[in-house]
Amino acid sequence: MKVVVIGGGAAGFFGAIACAESNPHGSVLLLEASPQVLSKVRISGGGRCNVTHACFEPTALVQYYPRGSKALRGPLSQFQPKDTIDWFAQRGVELKTEKDGRMFPVTDSSETIVNCLVSAARAAGVEVWTGAAVTQISVDGASRFRVQVKSRSVDSSGIQETGIQDTGIQETGMNCDRLLLATGSHPLGYRLAASLGHPMMSPVPSLFTFNLSDPRLQGLAGVSVGAVKLQLLVENQKPLEQTGPLLITHWGISGPAVLKLSAWGARILHETRYRATLQINWVPDLTAEALRSRLVQAKVDVPKRAVLTHSPAALPQRLWQRLVSAAGISAELRWGDLSKQGLNRLLLELQQGRFEIQGKGVFKDEFVTCGGIDLKAVNFKTMESRSCPGLFFAGEILDIDGVTGGFNFQNAWTTGWIAGQAIVKSIIQ
Ligand SMILES: Cc1cc2nc3c(=O)[nH]c(=O)nc-3n(C[C@H](O)[C@H](O)[C@H](O)COP(=O)(O)OP(=O)(O)OC[C@H]3O[C@@H](n4cnc5c(N)ncnc54)[C@H](O)[C@@H]3O)c2cc1C
Image (cartoon, rainbow, N blue to C red; front, side):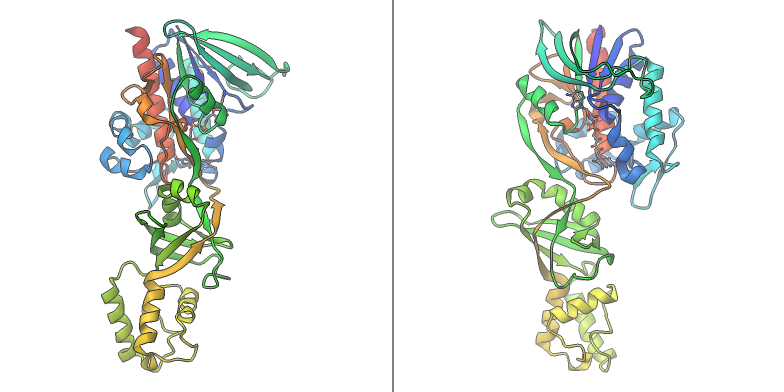
């Protein structure tokens, strides 16, 4: 029985290893279009690879997936972050947890993860071809596939990139009994899935920063605020909300709150061409009444201090000064002289300031695609196609994506592992 895995990323590797380890006598061939396997793992998490997240309750975990949360509930009960930690530990890789729950290898190097996956694949007997792009798949009889491969250099010795003889472009056809399609967000992979009749959700970017040019934030690049509440306001849409740290950048804003909002608003923002109104509550820990009382108290406590230089809110001084100016309060005005109208304007700036998003920027540490194979087309107990028996899917090719924090790799590990196990079961049955 021959299994072909298309795509040498996190999901493809996990699937291929699971399959080869549970069926040592079978043959598993992994085809990777680019010259190198695991490219995204290598650059992930700023070169540190945020492998997973320290959230061990599947029902809580699924809340981090703007797309796929319902479908992932079952799979995450089979293989969740605890299993990821164990999987790597059994192969000599220890993970550590950072304060915000993100988990990285203790070496802080993505190479540790790449090397681990490559060694595990080699030990399990997975054959890897790099520079081998699958261009066509056809169903050839019951559960048999014909795969058309355009290959440049074939590394039949295993996974090493060294010593490859470039043989020029060749077209090869091969047959196999089971196929795992794990091509990530590559358009060719989407085309392959669609060519076999699978409905697709159109791909749009997720996990990005917001571009905005607003005098209130100009010159404040590098200033960060521990927690803000953001509301995305788009006409005829329910406002989307996210809370978390925010970082002011040269082009606009970034940080966990923005990235989470970009993920939940990925489709809406794509439709509006990344133009929308954003309401920022810079002091979300206080209710409007509590903040008002604080400002009123400042009038009593420090009547002679300038509003500009004394902030009763825990905000970076330079940001406070911008918000005070934006509220039309002059630099010299003292707390004791602040009118009721001035105080109301300041409250609005602090908790309901509106900013216009004018485009999207790139978050270099992680990005992901929203869209892919429509989840209705997949049996999530096995990751097998409902319409094409013998064909399995894993990873980002599915219409599943998580917010930043290790959730996207967890999807790849979980769905890859389940697909690998299910392929073996389907062969043995
Ligand atoms: C810069 C960056 C940093 C990231 N950091 C993190 C992080 O720290 N934590 C996290 O959880 N997520 C992170 N992500 C997201 C994560 O990398 C992806 O969700 C994950 O790699 C998806 O795995 P995959 O195997 O499904 O797809 P991919 O990793 O994209 O792998 C798919 C592979 O298939 C190959 N391929 C495509 N078409 C064909 C074909 N026709 N034939 C043969 N091969 C083909 C591609 O070349 C590719 O190697 C990051 C993403 C980026 C871009």
